[in-house]
Figure 1 (cartoon, rainbow, N blue to C red):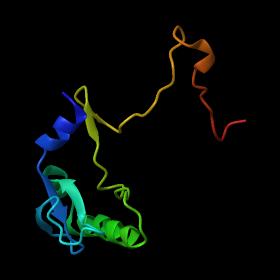
Figure 2 (cartoon, rainbow, N blue to C red):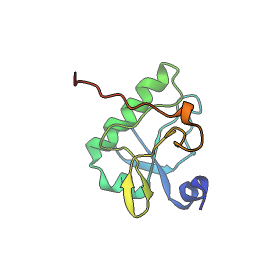
Figure 3 (spheres, rainbow, N blue to C red):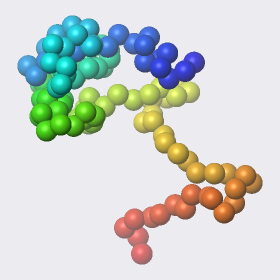
Length: 112
């Protein structure tokens, strides 16, 4: 199943800066600086204070002109992969046999 289809199957709701669920996602009157949207299941799993915090962050950063604002740690939406909830993984690099000169190098930070 495609990622967009998975997203569409979830019931996304709009969160106000007071932490209340305001309605369906995409129905914000302020088109320049819209409200935070979350899947209903995620919104219900958060406390009202946590919902308010992530919504206020979105409004604060949006007023500065940012269009994409990351959720707070508690409100982070994870993608289910293989039955386990994991963060979305981005480019993993090329495989050993395919393009050996293009392999991703792993950097270890903090050890010498």
